[in-house]
Length: 186
Image (cartoon, rainbow, N blue to C red):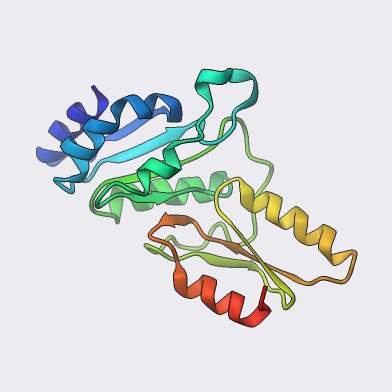
């Protein structure tokens, strides 16, 4: 019962960090909603295996958590692009944020550091990783690295892509997205 246990700790002034696989979080959904989120308790969910996880098997694919977490009242949802950003997000979630927050991260290891992943985490704010003028590529979490690779491919055919690291899926940084899309028009 991770939700009920975390809620009990949070009510008593402790900031619990609950680490569990994305696919197992599905089973705790009701507890997260009723015991944590509706009371707006400061509980940190470290959601491991978020996304497709390859050889872990069909039952361990973390493909639903982003959809259901973003629908939960009072829940904040973030995803780091690399380990440096993950460390900053844990610090933010425990020491600066107040309320339920989920940090989604994939299985495996990170491949280096993404530009600007060491900048301070600010609630609901993403960052421009690379400036561009022709198209906007929007990503969060491990997909930021993919967006950077796509940018390099597009550069070879003279398309200058701007890459955004959203960081937050809830709340979305609508201002950053609109500013970039208004600039690139795509």
